[in-house]
Length: 440
Image 1 (cartoon, rainbow, N blue to C red):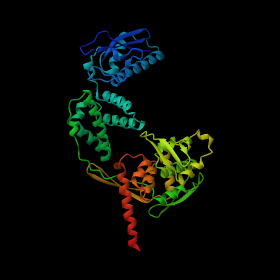
Image 2 (cartoon, one colour):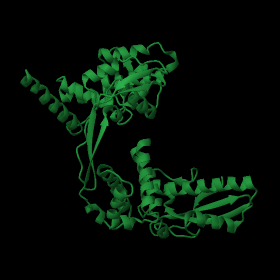
Image 3 (cartoon, rainbow, N blue to C red):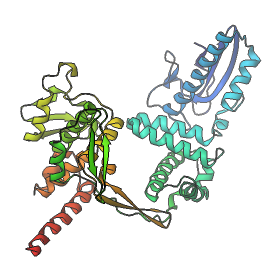
């Protein structure tokens, strides 16, 4: 191990002792303070880190300190490997300079000076602490990785005080003009930034709370719920996927004919079955992909959902059971209900499938970029993704007259707020259906 951490014997008025480190590579050794402190009884000498759940006298948590120590250890483990591979023999001064260059401070900085870390250092600590505390999914971590990239593009030298003050307005302008983001996306990015700034304020890294009242007026059009109506769902469910290489003659929304060549028929068939199963059960793609035969008992399934960790039981209708039956004898599935296919590939094949099924009616989606209203018209198949299956189940169940509170037991929704967009859609569909009497 290139780096070892240990506590100094001295303690300050709060009872905290400096966390020191010893960097040893190829005979060279450098001893210095890390700039962090902790009470001796909160230090794990075996693991060389702060005990889980502990904080020092300044309120700095175990996650923040351990994350910083881990970054130092990882850096010098890599540096040691580079020295071994290229035959370099460092000395004490070389190690001192490497530490200063890598972490932007001398090896003798104090804890108060460690608070001069840059915004991106604190963002990394925020992601580390919140990710562990809230058990973030890969998707959530990717959202904050994207935020880091946006902030870097906005200003690689941006500081916490910049964002907490007037800089938020400039950041919003950057997202709108340079990144060409929709207002809805800007709103989400702003929410992530405020979450981070609230964390910084609570930790004592920021004392400017002007950002809390920053609320730009962002025009946002209600998001249109795209789902398959029953006739469309039956068309997809019964569709026999042609063999590879077959050219299918299709008609676009304007009545013009064109041909589409079928590629990877086996993957499209798997996509059809998994997607339709979601449409008939309300399962998210992640839950359908993780569904095991052992989760199914008779005419129902019981699972703990991937996203929310809720345990739900769903009774299976004849359509869902018929899809399961297609894969019942597949020993190669290793206990899973369906063959594996990634979410990304499914989204690609799903659009191909729905295009082959002729789901091409034009749909207009309205959004705003700043004050500019933009209407985009796309054929329906381009707007269908794996999550459309869940929306399809909810909308069709409500239109069949199944009470919302029962639908929520299947979907795992805990309140009506999440269900409101679907209820609004089905109410509009009912009104449209009633008008058919006027046409008689």
